Image (cartoon, rainbow, N blue to C red; front, side, top):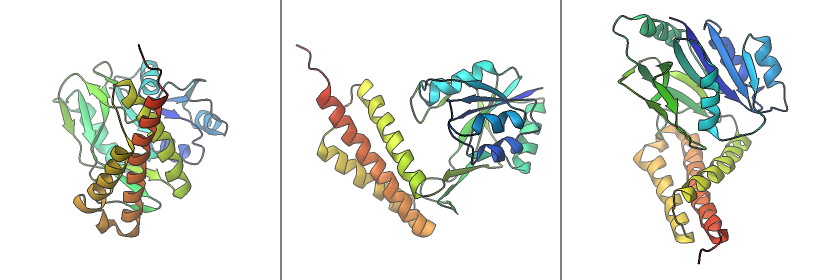
Length: 253
């Protein structure tokens, strides 16, 4: 059984080497680069990846489907550039795809960090993500952000976690909050959703309570509070942007 690793990138020079070295044992590594202005593509090529340049940005789901279309292995492992596979997870993946009773796809827990702290609460753990699957049995949804892997068949579970440096610092947190709230608002508008200032405030407050209180973010120390505020801001601005988008939409007679 052969394994292809697929990764989409955009200015990921700071993290791409760690990701690629963690899967150097795979039979094939495909990187679809979104016209990076840094050394991401060159670093990927230097580490043996096949790099395809995609000058436009259709959103996370469509971009990952582009990478999937280039894979040739029997199995596919989808990673983000800020994720990496530990030796323990590698061994479990190898065993899973070689097993006689293997399933079409596998989810795995993801252990993420926020501003340098590994988060064990706040809704970030165990954060199961389906990333390993037989080629031909799954594809990504066309969502602009927070895409899902749609699997035709049963999905099993691995025990070893995928590591993830989700947020490096506060600048990274603000940049991702801005980008994700914009994309999220566009998706909601396309689905006919509505919003208001009150709705934005309520969703922001509820997101903070859910993250910090109900999901025990307070046990993650000061970073747990910081994450709860970041999540609340993301929800607030997503609904506020949706309100503004709808206000600018031409009225039909």
